[in-house]
Image (cartoon, rainbow, N blue to C red):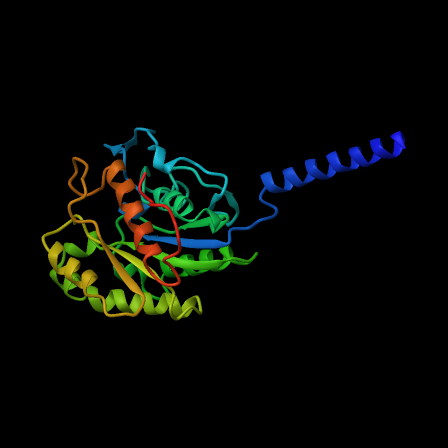
Length: 274
């Protein structure tokens, strides 16, 4: 009996060890809830970046969590850590964006969410015309989003923060609303998700004089299941263009609140505020 017990104990320990290794390597338990992060620099994250150097400070709301994963540039899942866009927006220095604060707020608000998968796609300095159907940015977004759900899971929303580059030209600003709606329609079509929830951010800043024209286009988007979260008034860094790290935390929490307030939410939950 003792030999049989020791054999069973050894087998159990071996099984648990192998199971832990599989979990640590993310061979199992792919993210159930997938969120696409797209747009330009404020989505990619410039919080804490001054003169091209990131200070390396990670706010507690942006800390890593074993239940939050990130799809890397090579399409593999890994534990999400800041900066989320470090291998996507490769031509600029990335810092803190809204993605980690958003994901941590979702987990805090709904601990039953399971594994959350973040799919970074944002690239700084991009005009919305560069995201049109058939462009490299559009194709990369669709490719990465599809790869994120190959092992199961559902794309729960697109988080979109873009438009600063479209404030430079009056024509770009004037056409922003139609370009935005066409882009979102095309993304939904490309992902075969005609009512995919979209949480877009209304600009807090811009590169040119036509910020209000673009903001009005964002606030007045006329597509179903598209919700606008207004970043106006959030603190900007000295360049008067990019959000500070703490402002990015606030934005991430605002996006999480908007997510919970949109069907199939709200669910019973705790506040997403820290």
